[in-house]
Image 1 (cartoon, rainbow over the protein chains, first blue to last red):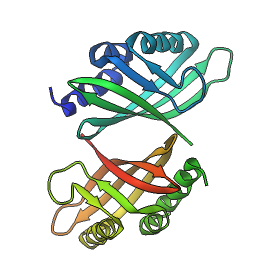
Image 2: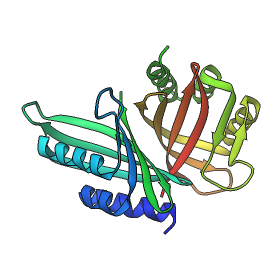
Image 3: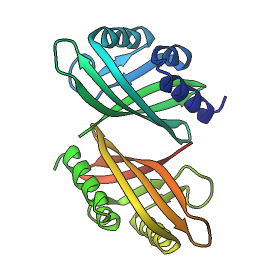
Image 4: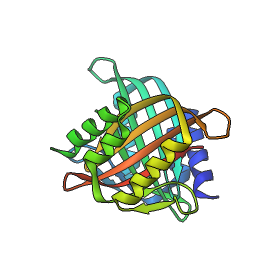
Length: 118
Length: 118
């Protein structure tokens, strides 16, 4: 599977709402996840830590609508666009507009780096 | 000027159609430009080479419509989305859908890396 084919398969799962399956299939065990923020969520290393973040996120956000665009491909990197309407627990419904930059090595995603619109 | 402020100013110029001005103001003299293709356009190094590519592009494409989205920011990198309707010289009118990933160092853009939808 080329990096482009991986990008397409990963993004297709996201378009079907299967975010966790996309991670399970394509993350390296050494995945590094980087968010554009300070604090303990800024950099997470390893599948267990990143899966735990996902579980926390799903438990604390109600997702009303997701639109996924891409993938945009360049060599061993690809970009996916996510626009979402979510309600964080105890807060007001909000729109999220972000992109993920994914780096592929040896057929797995070794880094995901998120960028927020702003 | 922070990287985020640079990203916003750069993207604002693009939204106004002032792509060349964005380059003149914010590219490093050592800018490296990477396109997701083979051949002589794949990697260009230095302001003169990248400006020449721009001149070639504008001379060989009629732009009908441009929509610019972003910036999406993460630390010293930002992403801008470009959707365009263009007619390459001697070819049929087409839609382009791509994103640029920009890396900032010392207040200038030192690398632009383009990703195509596909």
